[in-house]
Length: 553
Image (cartoon, rainbow, N blue to C red):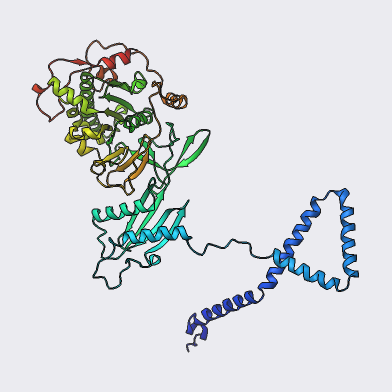
């Protein structure tokens, strides 16, 4: 069989087609340029006709006769006047051309004088940091062109809101100290009082500076749409997370990006450490987490400061105890250590038998410890054991046992935290202004400029090795505090569970795991397995007065 040659179109490829398309596009552009006056007049005639129809529709029916008479009179006058029809046509075309003109506002040609002054001063301020004498063609030089260094810029109310900075490749952008100097200069020259985010593109030698809007402070405690085991630490920037939640504010609902902390068996960061200054909102964060955890688990609160900030939780369903003294904290945390071991044992036995773990093992347990350094100081003065030592078992095995530990402390007492607390709390939150220890707590420096004055609950969060996110904790004040507003008080009271039914006091100490609420009320404080010997523990039972009073109320 003789092969037939391919058509010339297929042999030559798509080059003729591309040339044809280019010619057609050029012809269309030329026709558009030539016919532009006609297109403008046609558009104007259409707009004038539409305006006439609207005028006729808006005229009452009893007044349309007079309008028709006026129009006929004008036509008669134009017809009788010398050169009237020609003048009428010229006038109509001129009106159509004016009405059909392009009304799109022209984009500004460039920055105004004040903006040019700001960009020039910013460029001159960066010259000492982005230039070296050996550079033959420096990008930054005194009296140089700032348009080559700044790729894009945006202004808001006369101040920079976004800026793309190009810098030479020899700049040491991998050193934190070098970055900090540039960020300090940009922050000072762009306008203080606002928070800026710095995104370094080391591969492209570009730095993007973005002015961040303040995080919302009108979000109060509420039921968030989350799965069991997910706790909302607060709200953040839309660019920081890929999820939004509907939140109630005032009389409306809007979507906000949250910082969601996942706890439980599949959590990679099962424990959390919150650090802040006095009044920064760490206690409010613990209250918020307690209200979110109670619908799905049990909560044991240890208030080391003893200020009664958690009094609203006493006697509520799911709250095992609220301890404010040293003896109660030792009893509660000692029971939590034994409860963690019991859960591990029951879960292991269930897996060996090929059955699911018991219900009491699957139910989450949350240990909320506020200001443990105060209790450690009291324990040292009293010659007893530091309650933080009893957290080691829950911290080490809490992920497998369904036990979550949340510790809140202040900056000035960080050195008093136990090594186990610092090692196992990989989810970190810092509240209040940025201080010297913020980077040490988070493990990385925030990518935003510090602000001196921040509202309560404002700070940063970092989950494990993830990025540092801005955070605003929902307002969760103490409802029993007289300074709390009525709206916030009602919002917190609406989330509290019902009062637990009165439980008779046990005749003797129950074994850990049979009844957690009764076990907290009377338990012998023993060290966790593998931690010291029995001689270190007190030789008498330490009853929990707070837990007993709460259960009997």
